[in-house]
Length: 127
Image (cartoon, rainbow, N blue to C red):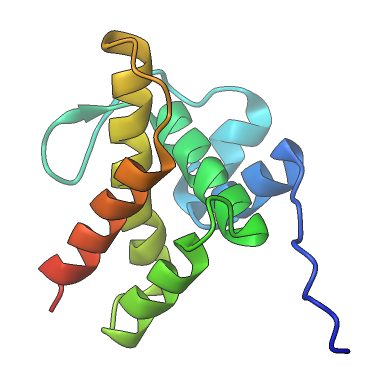
């Protein structure tokens, strides 16, 4: 009987290290504890680098554990469509941010089916 592949779990610290590695422009500020609360993003809008890195870390933990089930397959689909590894994390992170907003501002609970549907819609937007 073939063994099922074990899910790899990342600690929050491990996931944050990966997130920081993917944004080297913030690494030294992070390490010194001087990362600003807000910066102007590439789109000209204010953004929180701390929140951005936190969302990256959430995505890394989801991908490591394939939790919710199917998120790894969605990431692979995006990569097959030519989306860079970093941009895959950003695309998934958009859906994570939407879920966090709904949890915090609308009082909704996490809905894995709705979340995965949002991710599938992101894949479709690249087709």
